[in-house]
Image 1 (cartoon, rainbow, N blue to C red):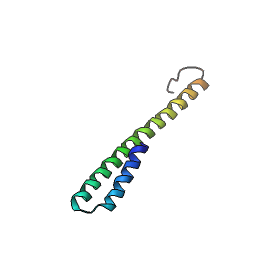
Image 2 (cartoon, helix red, strand yellow):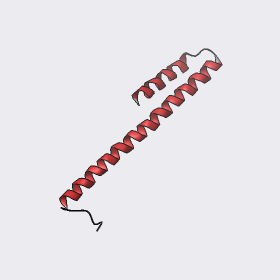
Image 3 (cartoon, one colour):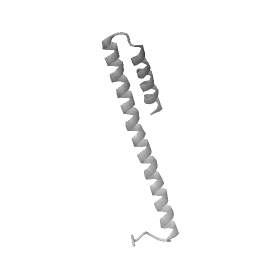
Image 4 (cartoon, helix red, strand yellow):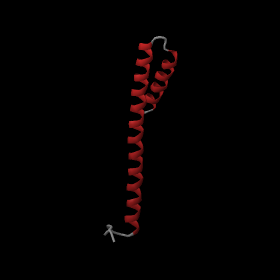
Length: 72
């Protein structure tokens, strides 16, 4: 995730340093792809983090009730 973020920054910096129109388009596409990969991985990471926290909360709640949850 961090690697894609850094590569996106490098692509964005290359976008600013580009001389020709073709180089500008390629740098824009590359930085966009890397930032998109970063955002996807960031979303996957936080979804997993929230699901883990929910599972821990559920386990604590079940342990407090001294048995399986009946949903009531």
